Image 1 (cartoon, rainbow over the protein chains, first blue to last red):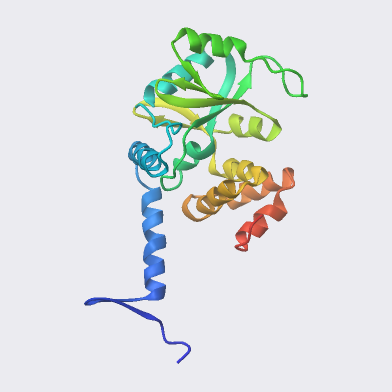
Image 2: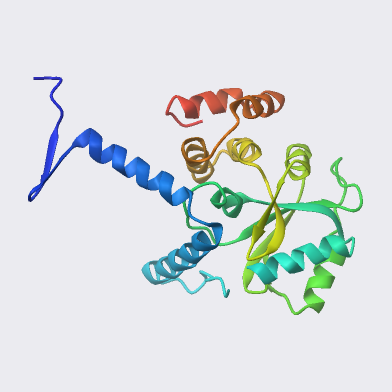
Length: 64
Length: 170
């Protein structure tokens, strides 16, 4: 019983908890391999999101 | 950011600095997934001394940038739309700059601190956000462990590294 993997169900989809975490780690590794230019575009989007969420005028979004 | 890098390269061409390399969050992003950061850290080896705690004068560098219409924003100078902080190197950072890799961004060459030296610099800084970057570098970047161990040994950062590698806080 103890060795049985925990199953997570999303409607018809079925995952093990371990599998979900492995998939997440794999996603982060793939993101790390994006071209640097793409990462900078994502960074600017993150800065805009942070500025809106925090509603802070002192957050500077890169003008590039 | 390509124009920012071109202007930083100009500082070296005009001999206002001896050498430089990008560090901090942006350097980390060359090797890991995108992370939120607000500035570009540039580690500089200045043309004159500064190693032994003497005054480091970056006036000529900032004069040049101000003439190019770069404006101040707190402790940052906005270079072509990007807040930049120029950080004169200490011993560890100087080694990092000298062994930095040449990378390209939109066709512009720039020097970026290697992941091994980034880990050491972040470990030494030791803030929560620095240690988070160390964890990401260790899991997402191609780190040469032999090289990293040599650096952390030289700067007495072994305990901090092994703590992180065991999954704890340094």
